[in-house]
Length: 175
Image 1: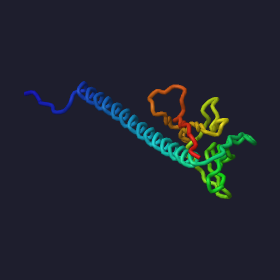
Image 2: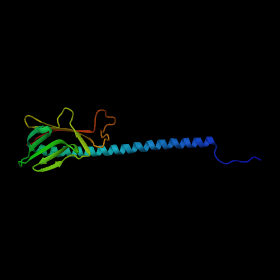
Image 3: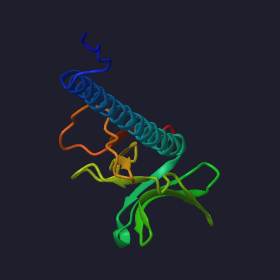
Image 4: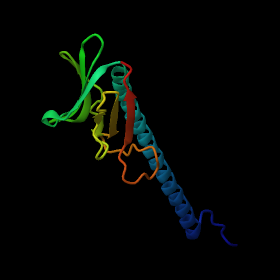
């Protein structure tokens, strides 16, 4: 009588290993894509939050001020405005040796950074960060922010030639 053998044939084992390998590669690709999407979402949220904060802080102060003066003295691009209480406020973009280019505000002796070292600020191409109208009726503010850790934070998928997000507005003075 013939002996009944129990077990898998070599072909069955190879098919099983192949299917398991295909499943493992698919799952690894899926997990990698999900982690990349989560990092990008975090970078977009960070850049958008810091950009909106910096822009709104400048807009709210500039809107109710007078005598806007845009300057590039000493390589530092700045905007100086005077409030009704005769206090001057200065907004400027400057690099430092251990800190990427950033936006700060200054009033009297108090200096407040408007962006952190987690984002990198750049100018809007040939448009300066601050542009003042000749008749002192408006001020343009324009800057780009991007993640400092090298994660693409542009909101549009596949946005070629753009790094980060652009923040731009024209503020009409209500003095």
